[in-house]
Image (cartoon, rainbow, N blue to C red; front, side, top):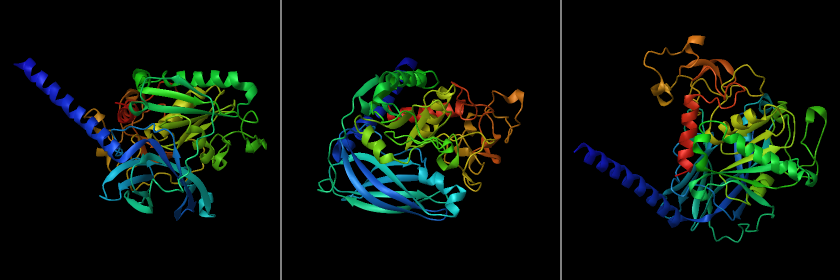
Length: 430
């Protein structure tokens, strides 16, 4: 009797999962084809305002994303892209993201000047006319519509040129991109004479991912590619040293005048190169020994190749870009001011302001754990609510005393961060 009940329950769960996947795939096939529509725009404004101005539409040959989970279930990011079928007004695709513009907006410079950033978003290529909306999270933690655009996929103004042809390599391949997390490594600052180093470095970083939990336990859910884009000069820009290099994606240290913040403003070129393979995440590997990196959720990831802490930086930054994890440290020099509002709950899964803690890791804590939790040795391995995180010492709380999102440790994600990463892997991979 008991065995029959277990068998029936297993069959019920199997059929529910199977039907969800079949429905999702059928919905994809109804509305989309296996290619990418890239929407490029300028994101402009200052501390108090922001505007979006369309630039171009481009068709790219691959779609690397899931085909069964088309609607974002995380509510992460400062922005989201929403795609509606223009006939039925049905929401057929959505995705949250953040941007370099938003980070600049929290710096002191944004209070004194206006700036514009080139940005792009990608969606599966539609079969029929869609309504695209870009929405912005407001100070009340809801979203406002910032841009609306109807797009006819048959428009003659959608650029359909093939991407510049680079050699591509499968560093780690587990299967169909629609059922995997696909990461593309883009090298920057490697010359044609450094091709062997480029390949060795890309292989090394592929291995770094699977040195840390929960990635190593889910190795079979990932594909990792590299596009062998060659630079004219070796290295990267070092503005503090007045060093400038001609590199393929124009990476640079000292983003927002933070010396170790290594990023690029040239996301147009970055996307053009990445289009050679199917991908969910872009990771720029920069040919430099200097400590640094950066990442923005569903935007891109970046780190230097040859620093003694490069493995830590690589895995830490991917926590931002892939899983939406926030920085848990509070004693470091950064350019941001009031990055997390004390009046609302942060969207990142590993920080809280206690405004709506029930939506965070409260159910993972032992029942008698105090809120806030004292930071001392007896609580070192206890999930709690420890003050200090998100670049400030007071008012923002993290779940663990130590974690890869807090300190320079490899394979050190706390249980809360691991759970968030696993949820994201499960979203992209069957």
